[in-house]
Picture 1 (cartoon, rainbow over the protein chains, first blue to last red):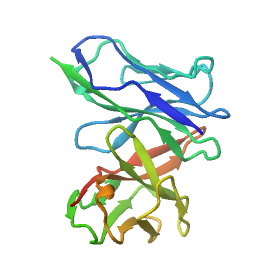
Picture 2: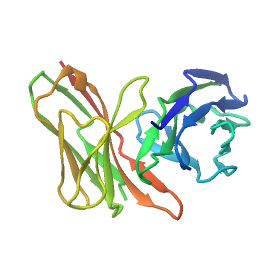
Picture 3: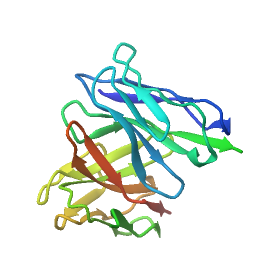
Length: 113
Length: 114
C-alpha cells in the first residue's frame, strides 16, 4: 500500500544552518504531496504542497520539489531560525481518496541559537 | 474565528472507563476527521466524516465510535478504554482547494489510560 518514509529525528542544527529533511514515498497513481508543521503545543498546519511531478512548493522560506523519478519530496530551507523548531510531517493523498492522507512518522527539528 | 477546537486538552482514565472527546469547527467545512498520534508512527486515521450525516472507518477504528452531530461538531467516543488507547488525539476538518484538499487541525487531546 501507499506509504511515506521520513528521516528519523531529532535533527539538531545551529541558527542560520541549511536544513534538509528527507521524505520518500510509495504510491500508486499520482498523489499530491504535503509538508505539515506542528509547533509545540499546537495542532498541525499546512506548510507547503505540490500537486504534480516537478512542482515546487514553497512557504516561509521552506521549499520542496515533487520528484517522481526518485519518489521524493525533501524539505529544505537555506537558513533556519530558532522559531523553526517544530515537528515536520510529510504526507500524501491516498490513491483512492483525494481527502485522506497517508502520513510519515514526523521529524523533530531543534534549532539552537 | 477559532478554527478547530477540542475538549478536553488532557484526560486520565482507568481501564474500562468511557469518555467522549469533543471537536467543533467554525470554518463551514464539510469533512472532518479523528486521528491518533503515537510516537514514531505519525498520524493514523480513526474515523472520518465526508459530510454531515455520514461517517466511515479509517485505518484504526476498533474501540472507537463517532457521531457527526451537525456540520460543526464531530465527537469521538471510547466505550471501554484500554491502555493501548493512550495517545494524542487530533480532530481536523478540511476544505477542497482547486487541486488539493487542505486539512486544519485542533490542538489535540492527550489521553492516558491506566
